[in-house]
Image (cartoon, rainbow over all chains, first blue to last red; front, side, top):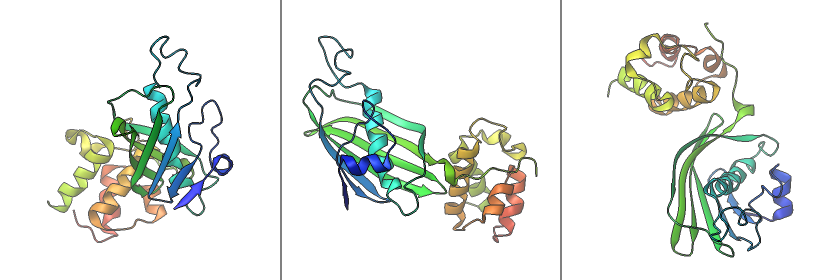
Length: 151
Length: 78
């Protein structure tokens, strides 16, 4: 397991605030990554999502998973400077709300990583409550060759 | 499952392709068979037949029919 703090994350991810959602991640390169983070009560999205009923938007929960899981690829030898892109969300379920001040736990696991294509499962929990589960695909575009059409 | 069934299933799984169009399917005929879908297809085939394809073959794998020809190099008879 490799523990990355925010400075380490800056060296692997291009995301920056306010669209950076990881600050300390435990990574098993090529296999899994895990993070716990308290969502600040004054996070920018709570004011607008929704006034009087603040909750973390589902799309940002997914982004949190994408960033957490990307580190498990970027820490592989030779992948630090390669770009990972989300190319498919196969399934996503939102089963609980994430409120200001909640501490979330993000678990992601790479089910298969082959030929630049990673199929990944992840979930976000608050305490014992699972708030979000998703399956998605990250692609390392640098690893994908151009196909000879029509040959 | 026969090798042919495995081969067809790889297209269905990786590209969500309609089985009825497989025989004449070419790269980029459907939106799912783009460069990313292509690598998913290759990964499915490699797992299904326990092979490791060479990069040149991955690049030349431009249709359902061409793929059958390429797999013969790996002693996969369809």
